Image 1 (cartoon, rainbow, N blue to C red):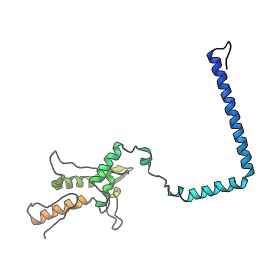
Image 2 (image 1 turned 180 degrees about the horizontal axis):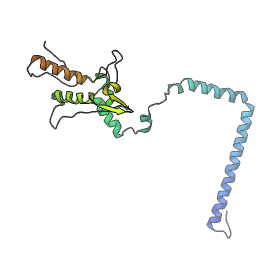
Image 3 (image 1 turned 135 degrees about the vertical axis):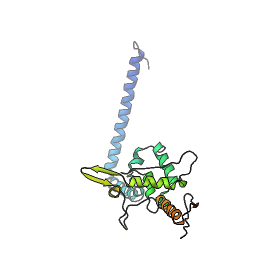
Length: 203
């Protein structure tokens, strides 16, 4: 086909218009025959979609579970927060604590965190006295709010059995070590290892 006296822009516009007309006619004819086919087989198009919906809804879609954890939906998979939480979970497994207080290290909540570290090259397990001193200072904290003095006993997590404040197992271990040393009146080495330890207190 030749275009006399026309430039390239006008030729491309004419070709584009012809292409649109061909597509329009093809779609118009296709939808016409589709509508005619649907109108001639109404029972098929009423029952088959309903049956397929029931089958997929009872088999495939029933396996999907809604995700309610906001962190999983928002935070990236390899975010720094998740890496640090994974590290804390490996160092303080949730199932290693009787009261599961170690989960406070890597789960969101309304509580404060206090992590004690030994000096370079030191072992925190050998600093029972210092840890217990810090623990006593935490228990002695007082906060005044609206004319009322709040203490640790007002804000701690209570045990369901005796309604007392739950303490980390490491505090109980350090207290047992201190009592064992005081009862024997001599400072001796008590075997203590991580994550499991066995205390042999002589009476």
